[in-house]
Image (cartoon, rainbow, N blue to C red; front, side, top):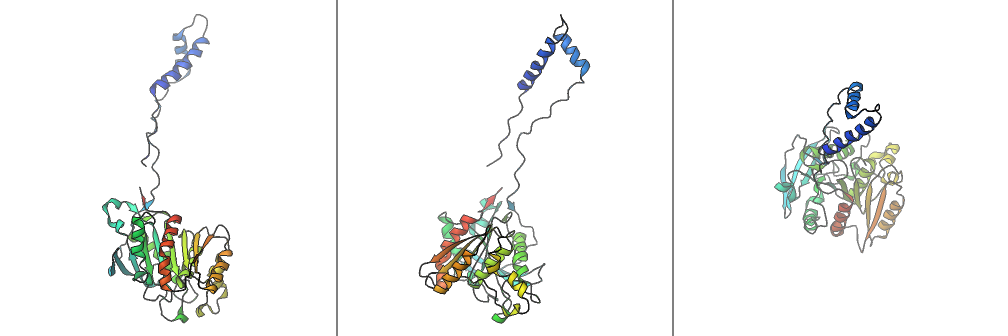
Length: 343
């Protein structure tokens, strides 16, 4: 809504105030004195009043909720066309981490609509299962989150999210798993994810200012990453959805660095009570081990962290079941993050 102007000070009100002042001054004059004596006394005792400053016609403007691209612009190629628009790809070399990795990007069709030219969009970063070195399964038709998002947008059930889909490892071997963290002596992929990626997004796209429009989601190994990143960086992310995740870092690369390993453990972080973030943790109902693991983790959450639990009926730890979870997770994210903003 446009700011409404404040009512201007009425000249008649000012005149009435001066008249009221003049009446008691006249009454206090010497016998036989009149209005002319009172005016003379005022003139003798006071210098002429300065003109009143004009009242402001409107309140100060609200701070902008839209952050326009800051640059420099990255170069993108088209990785794949979908019914909801192309998925783009670039390589990001992080200024803060020094890590170089592939990043895929999907912009909702609304982004290029002239009606949204001054609109900032919420950002959802997606992490895949497995090693995700050189690929991200959220970019292919196994997990068609882009098409589902647009269907839900048309139904008024979801935000049109900018979707960012990075790699999460630099080598395919599980013995070299970086677990979305800055493991001592290894590439600083935790910094790449938590700092370089948001900087890259703000440099290239119109976003919602502040953290309220930023979320992260992942399945399996990606669930571990999404939970860890949100808990470690509540200044960056407002919400997270770990789908069928685990919570204890177990990469061989942590050997000899137990203190750092615990500092990057979602199991420890969720119980610390230091992160004001909202999370939805899911488990497949057909997997008893997984449901126990996730429920136990949810129970450890300490305020201001809030974690809701969703159990997928008959769900297994399969990509096909992760696909069935997409509408539920997008609706939850929409309810817990800021939508598109326009100044």
